[in-house]
Image 1 (cartoon, rainbow, N blue to C red):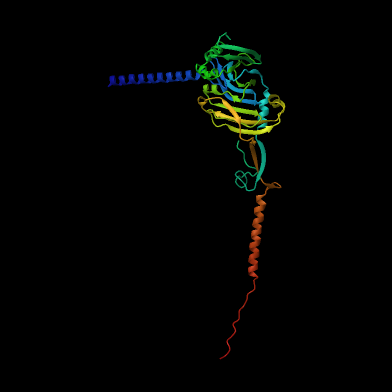
Image 2 (spheres, one colour):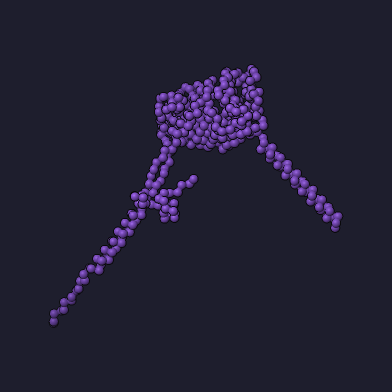
Length: 379
């Protein structure tokens, strides 16, 4: 019995050691997975060092098209541990690049914000007396190495951005060019660039870093302004399919008429936030020109970026129908600080009581009519 007990104890210890080893292996795998460089991109490819992470959470751009030329002012909101990163964006023709006005997108946000309208309601709702003990008369509210396949058209230093405008006849050459800058690109990037190479597009490659060397690149980046010729408005999105996290896109389209995407390109249906003709002022005027223009604001989410199957192409809608969101504030109708329904109901009750009393009084005073029977004459 003692030997048997000893054998059982040894086996139990071995089992516990095996279980512990398994847990440690699983933990190591999980930690290694978490430490793995995350690859995410905006409308172009965002790349970073091999031992860092980078994610683009939101992408906001203004797109102005006058029939021949397109301008894109882009602002990315990023987060991660990378002290610097590079970003590449395909364009259909040769582009010029400069720093954008930080006020532009804020002004467009104000123009397209919902308007507030007030309205009253008569009967009490949840949060109004008598449905809530604390009566306050209002409703409750809820809270570059040289490569023959790559041509460097131009290179500029724009604030924190090192901008290179490139041509390429080989997608792998683009990948090698960025790799030589110290970034490890995913092999899938060369494949994703192939459709642009086949169509002879050019590229804007941007190296960006915080003003303080060594500080991680996070928050909302300064906007960049790109201009290029195009016969129809387009917003490059194909490279975003390489992202590993859901993507969010906000677009302000300024054109002669109301515009809409030709398709959802694999994302959720675009949601219209605003549509209307505006007279540009301030930063919007500098971006779009002084002439009245039609502004269309869109929001779109890409819960599964790998489903993105192309670039956004826009066309004119059937009609320039205006649209603006409305935010209503509802207030209980009051007179002299008293909800109007209270005296109204009180007056109605008094009227009913008076009517009932009057009816009862009339019944009591109604005269009694006596009927006499005339005796028959004697026979």
